[in-house]
Image 1 (spheres, rainbow, N blue to C red):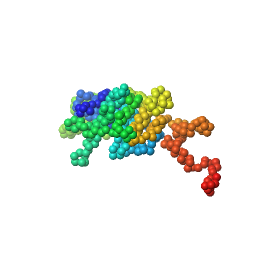
Image 2 (cartoon, one colour; image 1 turned 90 degrees about the vertical axis):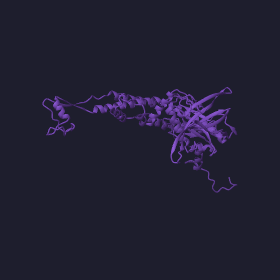
Image 3 (cartoon, helix red, strand yellow; image 1 turned 90 degrees about the horizontal axis):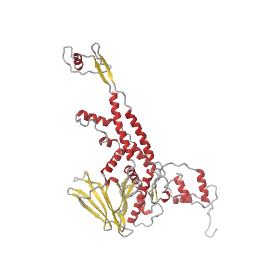
Image 4 (cartoon, rainbow, N blue to C red; image 1 turned 30 degrees about the vertical axis):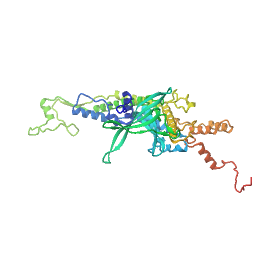
Length: 482
């Protein structure tokens, strides 16, 4: 086991695609430092050619379309705060979901971001002994290096997950820090969940700790691995496609075009002087002129408005300049249009079905890449919250309502006053529920999504009777008065 715990089953080509997307989203420094730009005259190892390549990379201009698109998509998903339906005993997740002070809103944004980038993420529900409660920890796709399913009673169940982690360890002097690799093995051993921590040592991976968490609700060991895969298509262990990969590839090609374009601008902008009609004597004189005593001065020939050039009879001086190259610029313009089109399609409606099991009524609705990602993340959090409830011995979760739901209304809707009036009349006539009316008003942005029906009812009770109505005063009434 020690020699195999670090084994990764993620294909090399998948890691390469993920790295490309990560680098493009990170910015130009990662692209300049990587192998995304060609090395000009790669067989020429001279200092001059190295300097030329450094200048070639430095002049390239990076257009961060992929990063801007990612930020815009996250902004659309979190245009409204996510809705939650948590019991009081689980409300700590709103401000500290992972035990390190990260709110569930912040963590879910990072999960959506990572899922949009590479189409893979993971959530692990752990139990913190020092706080006596369950927490939800987030793992990027690159850290989920191994997984396995096994058949138990005729059903395939998740039986192994290996998570690679980078932890900070103090140096011997107590001041410095070093990064150490460790592996968290989540496994079903004879039907019982066991968590084993392996650390990297000189002798290889070594077991540091073994934990068998217990669920407070069932008063026994867990019979499942509390780990949830999240993908861009569905939430199984299959590696889904990266939603931003196509956009990142065009962005990289645009960066290469930019390097060529800027190099062309520099080359074309540097005029080449030329002189004709010189004898060898005049050539030598201009290259290394003599003073009045006939001694070579070694002074270079300067070209400029304040430095006249003396030439023999019949000689001529001029500048040669290359014609501007517009092909590269046209290629850049075309790729910019392609990036805009690809980014727009990520929020365009398609005929794909949503994967969230808690949204059966919306399964036939049109959706988009962003909607699928958001739906999958919401579903994953709902499952993890139920596992946290297992740890915390909470039994009053409402199974018929989502416990955590990220907004999927990406386009600002116009308020239809006539429709609202019709809905109010339907409610007044008893054919429409008040909760449904308020749900519509929240969707339209009339009511804040974080205001629950209980909050609204409490505010209405404290305000007294509506304007224009006569309220009943109880002032002065005794216990036996009507």
